[in-house]
Length: 231
Image 1 (cartoon, rainbow, N blue to C red):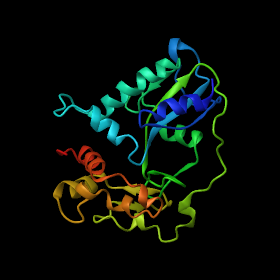
Image 2 (tube, rainbow, N blue to C red):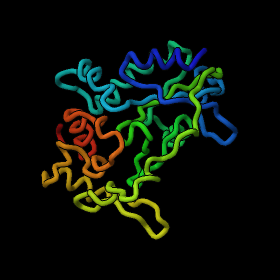
Image 3 (tube, helix red, strand yellow):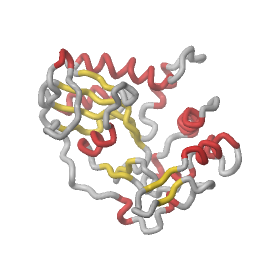
């Protein structure tokens, strides 16, 4: 089986195959279908607004249950994984899996100053929605390691200095700190800048792929889910 076969099928749903890897001895990866050892992991996500028209077209006008995006994701990706003889894992499945580590194994992504993974092409406007675990090795996995983090060439790091409540900072060791309560409180407050409707001010400050930002509806949906308010 070829990676491109899976990636092409995934693309029809609005999701994007974000690369893959063959697990090594130090990787923490569950078993695939039937308890078979996992031989290949393909990480699935979205880039920009790729999934949004598909999600909104399928979403009921009055969602009867919480987490409509997660439920829709499962309804689309679980049968697609089974079609290829793979097991689908969602980021919210327990026990929780190291999706950020898997993402870095599958593609060239790096931790940005505000903690989100940054991609040299997509910037901060991408996400990970699941993974396909295969009991066989897939041929044609995209190469990893040829690119470098765009943050290395960003001297000003505007993402660290744009948050209206200074939720992001650096500790003595240079690691990013994040005040979740301050961030969520500002989003709920309605004070300017209006992160609830316009999106996270720190994320918007990143100059990489500014044209690929989420649209207003998608932005508000995610921010409302984070803050626990109606979208």
